[in-house]
Image (cartoon, rainbow, N blue to C red; front, side):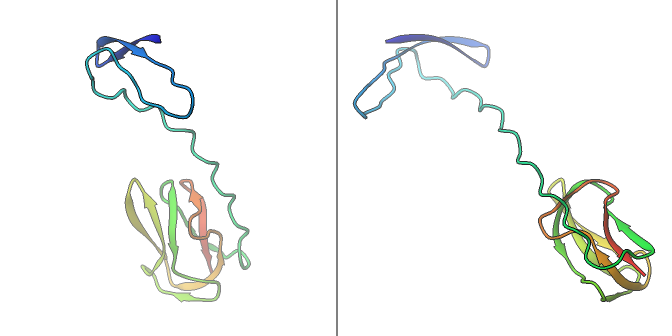
Length: 129
């Protein structure tokens, strides 16, 4: 038997734990049952995927990410014609979906992101001519 002192919500509990060998496992607690201990901190998130290479030549008008988030959908491809206010991508930030719109009429010159990409505020998503 091993003895442990566990603190839960400011209360201390003395717990006896028996090691069982041979494949069977069942916890044995001598102290009154208490609420489970708080979960451990989550593991560090996986490194974000590298940004894909831009498809197409860079245009003169840039459409940038207004906030950090994840690209849920890219609505255009190189060569598409867009009008001012047309949604060109959907960015998820803080559990909300935000449509990113074209600032002016034009033709899509390059698409610099793909679905699932993580972006920071100010990253160029799409360029227009």
